[in-house]
Length: 425
Image (cartoon, rainbow, N blue to C red; front, side, top):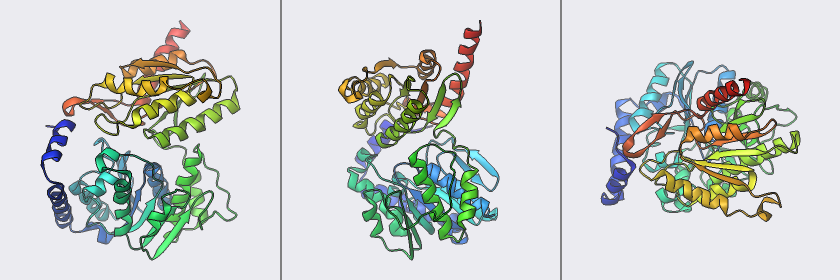
């Protein structure tokens, strides 16, 4: 039986932190013991940061595969060993101790030379990275997130830093991020830095033609290239691998292309959401100055990071002509209360804050399918719809640990097909 978020919070409240820490440390130790320390037989790349982790792990994996290595990949989308893969239905980016150690043992037994892992601050806090020998640690970026869980931004950053503290061989760091200095302080045999404005790694005279939109994907690609170079893989091999990537599931994924465009993206932090909106807004205005942007959003995870709810609403109202606030993953919270908090931020944006454009229309629709349906109904030829917060996640998390199957991408296709039949009639 699943334990609800509320019960988990009660447990955390009454059990001392040192005891919880000891519990997780012991689990990490026994996980390594039972599965015979698999990380000693395979090179492991750990990617951490607030945003871009999944895309960066996917890119790194593709580079290793292009270099003809057998690779294992564990991220928020999938668990992959060689050519065999399973969708990550756990709703955990970095699963528990025994799962990760077992996964690595399976990768070793399958003959993989590399494993690429998405490493989260919560995973580090619970010692899931312990007793894993990392070949390389990658830092993508850092913005406020999981503040309530960690207690402060500094503690959140400190959790991320523990991956670099534990990794002695290779560090890859985004030098354009204002927190780069913090991560540079940890010693390593080799350090690779990258960035559009700073960094000692550049693509020299090799031109990369990425198929993925957004400046943030350039950063993800640079991180992946650094990892490739650190393992002796040529720039040409990195180029071939990255140029073959047509898209990442649930990351700026275009689901409908005509008569309007519909994108689904995982973004649920203010920083990530702003980058998605900015990229699509610039794209739409360049292609058609009269196009409108319709945004469907919620707030990631009931019971956590409540501070960001109005902030997400404000961002949506600044960039989008029509804002539809809907349910996402309420867990044990009242979903309408979350929606009201997001909508309040959206409704606070004035005409001046939208650069003298008309104020956004803000709608509150509890049912996520109805919200998507409404967005499709409102769209006109040339418009852009962007649905954020879930990406390719396979479920919606409700109270008392209940989940219902879900996929934003599939819902879009189903509702668009219904709408098309109505129009044809």
